[in-house]
Length: 611
DNA sequence: GCCGTTTTCGGCCCGACTGTTTTCAGTCG
Image 1 (cartoon, rainbow, N blue to C red):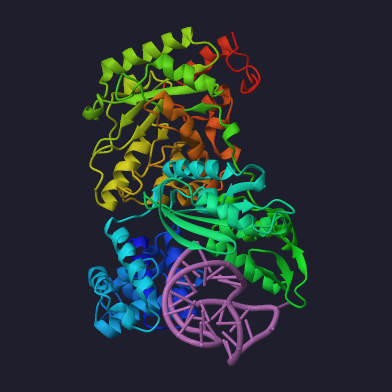
Image 2: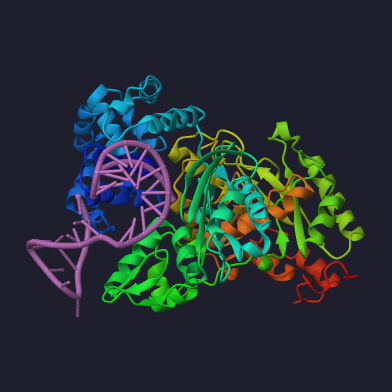
């Protein structure tokens, strides 16, 4: 059973318990374990084989361990079954409606036995909800609107579309000029999470602002085009939903509280909870305004995140790491990684041209990559199995390699490597002959078919591909498409161990709907000493700048510059790639003729000018 | 339900805003 499936059952239990009126910390304990499982790199099924191992995980005690064992054995467990005798499962959807929560949903259920969104919506439209305590006409209107949003299945957004929407909001708010000091993006976008649920902004108020400043700012913000509904509006915050269903929260904050507010609204919630627990142990209390002493409420810090972390005796924790996955302990021990940065990247190792399904020519891709300051790129079109993408057979692959090398002569200031994105067939064999793969500089292998294979079979397939001596990089290793397609099912630990053993690098695919490997798997790779490359998988010159999303995910995976192969200068990069049989040093030798070893990175200095 | 240099009980993060009611519970992040 997958960790995700177990987590879902526990999460449902938490919500049902909340509906049932259980104490906060009881249902929170179920949520906590669900979160733990979702971020766990090992399979809970494997851990649970050893009776004592389960309770070694934080947040899992004897009772929870029994629950998990029962879920793994039977697919469900008594706690949830008992609750589902009391409440219908559809009530979990009712709770998701904006303005409704467990208490009100439970009340509607007990009064009218209405347990679906449609039933509750009908009661609201008929004016029957206002008869219940705590409900009025306004609540009914809100519920009708929330039900409409629910039926449209509003959900999460890919990071690039969320970022584009955020830029529009920021641009709009900045029109206030000197009436504000600054506006910053917080929330999951600031943490670079792979998908975004809503947008959070902090507006910093200028010193000595007029008393009605917040009112003026709020008025202006609400003139943003494409606002569908104002959700809340008060003394220091305004919330609204845009017509694309993205929710936006803006908080207006005084300078002395800016750091506390950024920390608070950047989250994650679990990171904040941990910080607050730590603060309490040190005799402090932390809220969105300041870190203060519990005893006499004396202000200790608040203007910057740095000073708050410092007072909590922690190194500064970059937003990408704030997930309560060990970063606080590492910050305490001065053991946080020094995260890779976009400017460390010297080359892009997966991209397509008109030879298969790309939009641009080799030269166009090369020119665009050079203008980004890269030292090298690998041009990697598809192989023949991917017929829909006009994949290349052996003959065309060699012709394309020759074309790349010819282009390398013409285009100055960047090195073009002849590559391939060769398909991993159902059997685990690669889609092109070894003699052809031997003649290429970079062999990237990936799966594009039979994606729903059984776990054991898929593991064998991937292992076979990794053990093929010509495979150097595995591209988009789990094949997931965010919000659209589930990842392949295979034993990640076995695969990473095989990569390590065979010197195969894992790709962190920067394309916003892939971001694959994902953060927790990159962290696993790093812990196992598996090298990573960050590539865009560009199908057009416009895609090349997507690299930044890949770097963000790499940072979320705790990767340092030294963990990422394409931060290396060309000669070192080629030396670090797995050596293919027979062809060992052809590229390195040819390189020695054109460029002195350890040539400086041209970025920002001589990019585009090298003769 | 978990957890422990305040250890087997009694904590477990904290505040804004809404809609309702008239002082506050519920929702939300």
